[in-house]
Amino acid sequence: MQEHVNLSVEIDDLLKDGRQLSISGITRELKKRGINEHRLIVTGYLRAMNDLNRLNEFDLSPSKIYTLIPGEYKKSLVPETPAEDLQEIAFETETVEDDNSFDKTDFGAEKERETEKIKSETESDIYRMVGAKISHLASFAVRFETAVYLYTTLFERPCFESELVATGLDAHQIARYFGGKELLVVKVKNDKKYADEFSEIANGTSAYELPAEKIDAGILIRTVKILNAILKDEVDVSKLAAKTSTKSLLDF
Image (cartoon, rainbow, N blue to C red; front, side, top):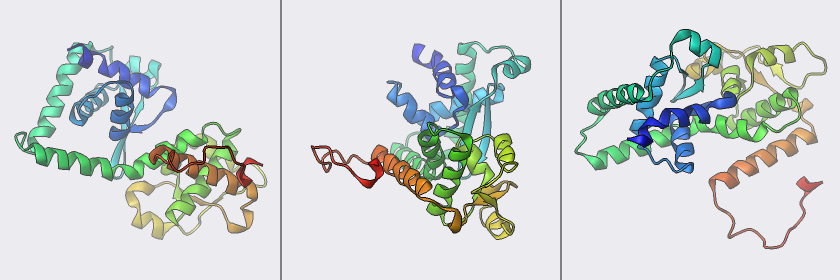
């Protein structure tokens, strides 16, 4: 039972420093720590922690994203819940979802359902991936501009503020960005068609893009490096890589 008692602590630790993760992301991160809990168990804990005001949950279709509620605010809402009580609530939550969604004796159907869920969360995972790769960039403006260009290039449409927030960029800092001079990013004036098509992603937020005439070599190089790093994280190309170090244009 000890492994379940510690699961809420591990989730708290994974989401510290403002991290935003989906259910699949949290499950994978736990596995990296040697905690091989079933996805439904993790889902139960997340729902329970949200119900107890220990986590924020928001929809970013087709997934749910979880963030920690700041410590002081969390304490003012609810006293710390004993781990064993949280475990009981989590199992109740997991059992209800389990009973309503598939026959527990049909393990083949369960595996197929889990696989489809993981596939469906690829869209939200891209925000986590990009957020991790741009976090080292020197300033908020550079992170914001790079994310906007990367998303508009990848999705072939303007990107929405809700997507940038899911990446880890602060909405207040985005607003302050537009108080500066010589801006690369612009707000899209006629974004209704995109907002209608991607209503759950748009979520009533502004859309942004980076006009072609403002794209410079620096942002192109950063974007290529980020996409290259994400690809290497997802695909093992070690057997195809040269054994000796070589230089490329990106190294200069």
